[in-house]
Length: 217
Image (spheres, rainbow, N blue to C red):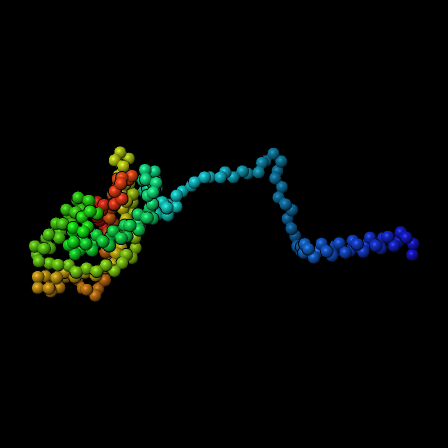
């Protein structure tokens, strides 16, 4: 066998070897594959703008479809950066139980620091009326079934923020007369209490306590 033929056989063997190696590495492709998309001449690739910051999730998570409330909370945070909506709601949860049970039991001295003047006067009037009638209330708080932010406003001139919270709480209560007889309620029956309470505070002040300034349903 002459030299040119031997060289061709050697080259053919090398080519087959390389093809088999590439097939093992890349795999086998079957079917129709679209060619890579081409950008028409004269058109540039779209550029995406990176937006820094964006919505504050601490606000947006609680103010869906409430743009005015969201704006008020943003102003509160601008005045007092340490203010957090989620933290506030956590405190409101505890305040609701404390104030509600304090009012039901007539323990006004304990809850007075957390009440605005008008709310305190209204609560105290009811408690005084009960006492004159010789009635006492025995109440136990079961828990909060639902709670959500209902509204928020901010007074730019006074720097006072107001946040309204919707509560659906559960409790048991009975009203007893002078003889200790139950005249209203059932100690074994859990009743549902629905409220919308508004808390207010001067943002940026040294006093961290919010006061209950309005109640409603």
